[in-house]
Image 1: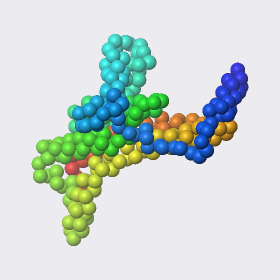
Image 2: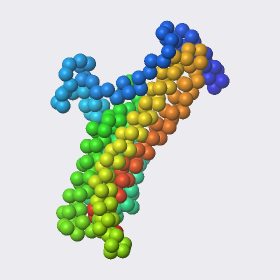
Image 3: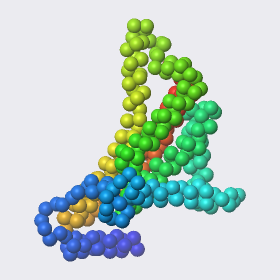
Length: 267
């Protein structure tokens, strides 16, 4: 049965390559077109208040999170359903991460960190749907998320410790002559955090989707041999599913590490 399905799929790929190959020779691949921000109406001027495809897919991410974490867990059954099991697994996973990295003091920030993780993960996964839009591929979105983390960590550090929070930049274990130089390096690295935080997420997501688009263009241009890039698309797509989770995890655990510095500013 499996061989029949594979054979039918293979014949379908060959037929599509023969009959739907482009009439104009040469590749016409535009991998960055998928990242264009467009008004929902499809035309008109794009202003900061204009509903766009970014607005739509961020809204769908929020709806999906609400459906999973609230509606899916509302019954609180002793024998959980699959949706409830996924919600409980995500809750326990992030709770343990926050507790292990930041300690008991950091658990008060658990709702915020849980929200970050679920939003990034859901937005990444929705971006893998056909004809969708990946909001986390835009630096404007990831920069806001990173700056929120940066401001939250900095304010928390000064509120809890006052000027003692500046001890985070003073390497007391180093020789006295080197401490001012190391303090400058530590200060620069601290302010670079939101930059690397947002670029890592957006860059990885954007790169993966661009690769998928390039292989899709090859599949449309190679005709009879279009099955070759299709196999590559399948492999890259599987990798992108993994990257969607890993990037959400990396963003979240770095948030926990930065928060630990604010709660316990010592070198």
